[in-house]
Length: 390
Image (cartoon, rainbow, N blue to C red; front, side):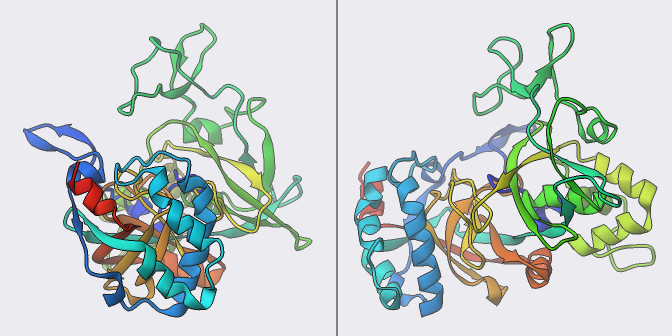
């Protein structure tokens, strides 16, 4: 999951839009490049030619400025930039007049196309569900913090992951490293005494989708709100239950079928409680939470993500903290965003997940977001020439 979250509403549920995986595939398919630098980078159009509006630029300027402390010190997994490449733009962003925000981007950035620049974007939001810090009648669904026995395998006791890190799991009674408890086992009580319960929720279906989002707000009966965010995951693979439904012919417009949106999938689960519970358990992944104290959810970059301004990307292809221009067949998602998050289903070049905030409208917009078009990554001026000279 993403640092806030890690999955997109539509994409993560349908599991139909996960980008290409790195490494070779059976049958002689060529390996997919593992970074933007390996895929290929070309100069895009002049930034001044883009229809960048004032409000859009102001939101992006604010998000970029918040990202700068991270940009100046972190390694860019895409290979496109170095920390020092951002220093001039970050210094200017700290005092740039908001009413001159479009000029800021025109002065300090150039556009780049990654690969074919053909973008696919979904949406996510911060859900609000009924919850309480303490158990009470009607609030009996536990929301867990990180378990004490969830650890990474010691070197030599399990096969490393593709990225070289050791897998997550637990050591059983005999001292053998094994996969961690899956969703079905956790639902059956496997975490008793092993993980703190940070809150209690009213509806197990809402908790499932809260895990898909990776963050949210719990509203208690007295009106108080507790904001929670992603703390970790059980190390088991994510399965998009919408994709399972599609394979079984449950998604569509015919008799007995349901819309392929988050709302349609929830409708199926509620109308078929036993089958719905079994369906949710087919996603063996489980997300653990922590309480957040800021004014919004925190993304993988370590800064608060903002509605209509923050986007999740694959950091192998877009530097976290970089502005991104989207021109899609969904006009509401057009414009300038700042890459501040990642997602379990957000993999591959030109794959994006737009953040829409919280509330009913955000839920509707994110749940139905599916747009295609072109993406341009904004890099510090001179970055493309430096890359071409390497």
